[in-house]
Image (cartoon, rainbow over all chains, first blue to last red; front, side, top):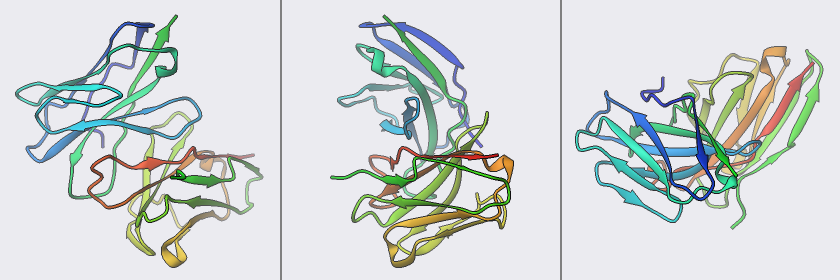
Length: 111
Length: 115
């Protein structure tokens, strides 16, 4: 079962930063935080993952609190194509094989 | 590189019929996964292949579902006989190894409608 809590929906103005929160208060020391998104009618797409340090790639930034009980995915300049359902997932990096997707946050980028 | 390819993109069948979904993973990816989202529910894991072997099939809902990966390349997921509750989107994903440093790569899915 999903071990994360996310708001069901959010809006963001085009061109502004989208900040998507995720609570994972029961995260274990060996579990990573992954973010995926699903754009309508496509398969889930990997965005970013991290353990305890903040991470940045060409798509997004991931900010993890010091106690690791929550994190925020930041899309620095949201575009209409970023409208999607965003999933925050915690799991160990080197073990197991399942992602528990949960219900995610439906982000709508508004023109 | 080519992504994960799934066939068909859509399938509409009658209850009681058989349907076979196909997944072609990224070349060289030993790990292949099947997931599905049935109507109104979350995306759920079905099973995991490492090459031709089933590593974990704990998510398979019942014995009407049969997955194969002969030769460790493409995989098929057969539903026989199909029931109304099997309607949904079936996703396939692949990864080079189980550590997923960059996550899986998912296909676009097969939308199955059982009428």
